[in-house]
Length: 330
Length: 291
Image 1 (cartoon, rainbow over the protein chains, first blue to last red):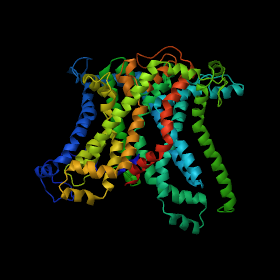
Image 2: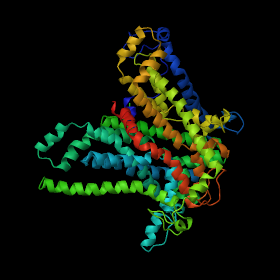
Image 3: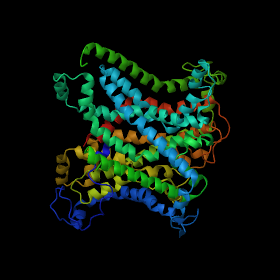
Image 4: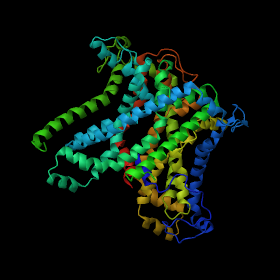
């Protein structure tokens, strides 16, 4: 999902820049006023009205709605809460042992996912790339993309059936003379289940971008390496991997940015009170606090904390990668 | 060490590679085969842990049973309606905005792009969204699903990239002939963009077909649910003490019924998948390659 590489602005850059002369990259003569722009392009601007309303109402209003993290909110009362309470809710969750439990779970699951689900598409793409027959190649690709198109509910259903007491995994255990295990009721198994099902669902789709990047590597580089006597492994190491590095770095930044938002939907579908000790993450916890128990302000404070961490993570990852490898999202 | 026997080493590598990739294919497909086998099997055979790849005690009875539940069909129809309406609205919104953003001369373009892109990295979060939808009175209506998802920034950027790649001369010529911007978009740009439009329609349609959480969160009546929520309520009945939602059915649902519902939910995707898969790949490439 490295589309964002096409973007030429930093998010939230500047205001409408009313009085500001336009950036020099535009073709128009400098210093043209907004009135002229409006007269010339009003039809274009009119096309943007509905989408802008959408972003305003459904994306930016909720951001403002986060003020209830610092205000007392009553269901049925004002949308923006009743009165300021300062950092009361922030202090509340910082002193809440359950919060630190779910915070730890989030970090652990996030790191495990990154560790396993980030490199595997690279490996799989390299393997697929080595396939000779075009038909075989396309078949393997088609099959591996398939799980990406399933609803999370179906994925959760499949996981449950695979791991049920009468399911294939337990059939295998029984055939080897072991007792069946109720995998989904045991906290110790949850992370394994989460990460492996995540791999099952995302690895194939993740190869698309790498396979595209592999085709852009100059064939002459391989030739030069061969002439220098490089083995296939060394060719992979010195030509292929550097060739896909910008892609990998971009995806790594994106993954780091979303790593606090670990698969909320899947966890919500797969966990239960027995597995809370390992499965409950920030997003599911705030869902239960807010939607199920109606502590809206408390949950909003946690949600805001999570969003700010996410934004900080993606910005620092971006900064680090620009400084070190020269690739960045913006 | 280097290239002692390159051809032989290479042959070994290719054999190992073939084994690994066969393993990947088998592991990917296995759950599907298993679920189909379960859906066609006798309940007792499943309970006894006998069903694996082939149906045991072959029967269509479970399909008949699920098909005889009117709620299932109402929910299935809901999914269809939600998907069509949501995709149509999302397409209009996304196309309009992407076209505006693709015009490099436009004053304020950077700002307009920034507005969209910023939402990729920062969002209001679950609770404020929930309060917003509730206070707008959208709960228990199709709009709670459609409106908050009317523009996907990823799809927007894919489309913008495509529009930017179109030759400007055609549009300029039409403008000189006095055609309005709307006319140019409708009669010149869109006919040239069928490929990307198809791709984005599919992106949206699949994501709306698969979505469940918005409906689960904002809808409280059985006859409004999409089929994904129907399925969720079935499988949630199986886990002990489901914590989510007030409507979680507590009965234990027979595993073959779950399997049948899963198969029926996935079938439309599986049927169109072979034909549309390359469009998805093209869409991702379009978004990714353009640098």
